Length: 370
Ligand code: FAD
Image (cartoon, rainbow, N blue to C red; front, side):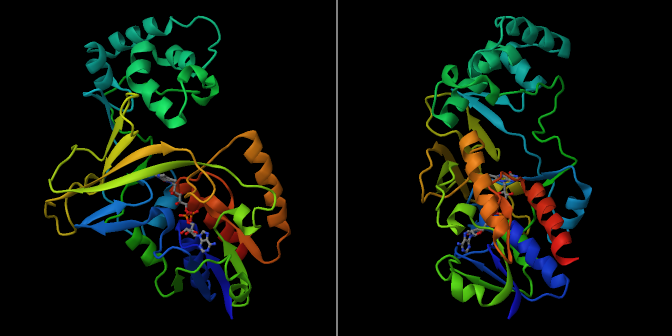
């Protein structure tokens, strides 16, 4: 009999399994997918690591987490610097001096600040909707070209009909800094995320293509305790209702050309283009293969916001009152469950960046194993 059955070979499950083994425990990891690594899975296509469930950029301010993850992979120096494409005009993101120079021809930070201040004046009272909120923060030009269309595609609604609280802040940099994340550490694991997770699972029994909920009784009989990283509502057969998610649809294309857009991420900020952004995966690794050779082909993914319905891939939890309350009810059932630990983004119905997932599983591990 195993000490632990870990349901899910994503980042949370794989790290728990690794730590349990390190503490001398026996572990079986299962996953219903045909591959390990959950949503950070990267698939190799023509030498390119394709981020199959959405682009993943590792970034953290936590040195402990950074040191921890570096035992499983060496990270490259990738820095996320997305570009916005508004009807063929290209702008730097996040909003910074390059953006303002392109938008208005301003050259100094003082000129840029004055331009923004002048445009913000348009909104006088309390902003009544997202449009007014955005204009009150950065002015109309930036709103019209870089925020409006993108946000409307993401939410499937007009910005005038969206509540103002969705946008609390819109960071404006009066420097020439295109680095999207304000993180001390950032990069992409060399060799791909799948290889990184495979290193975590080294020496651990893994069975793929096994749905825990389908064979629950037999699988439970194999271990003393269970770490469950699947959806919490599915565990309880949705008996209190279904937790909702926001979804994304990806359309991948292999192109017989070396360079499609010259950057990993280009956001399409007009309303007419149906996709929100295009990811060109090879640029996460500077267009090179493992041996440093240029890659002749490229893979792009167009991302579309889509309505989520039960059965679709769950991506982002919906943090509204209704779903929050339902989660609390499921949490009570989970707490009453003997010998099962619920964890990870689906088990806790929580959006976790990868570094936060690592913090969460390491904190749980300390309670469970030490
Ligand atoms: P998952 O990776 O979802 O793993 C859960 C696993 O459980 C899956 O493999 C699933 O198949 C398995 N499973 C579920 N139910 C069952 C069952 N019944 N039986 C067997 N197996 C089951 N974070 C960043 O830091 N940077 C980013 O750039 C970033 N980009 C993101 C983009 C998108 C679109 C999304 C959705 C997330 C992004 N994240 C990013 C967050 C990151 O994906 C998560 O932190 C991480 O994947 C969480 O790992 P996990 O193990 O909790 O969940």
